[in-house]
Image (cartoon, rainbow, N blue to C red; front, side, top):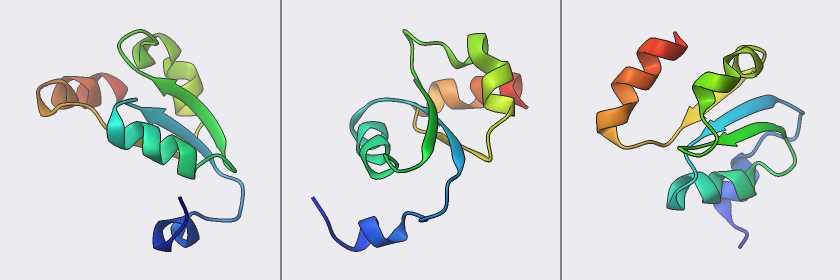
Length: 77
């Protein structure tokens, strides 16, 4: 699938952590295939166990249900 969103992905290399592998997270993972991706993380691949890797990234993209998001952000901050 190509389109407007494909042109929004930066062409420079960024180190990006992806948390959440549902519908949206999986789509973003595909769009970021040219970037240095850390993760993706989910319930089975816990981001908190890989905190040191996430700290070294340029950006973190999070797609988790609202009830888990606040707690995750507190722990990652």
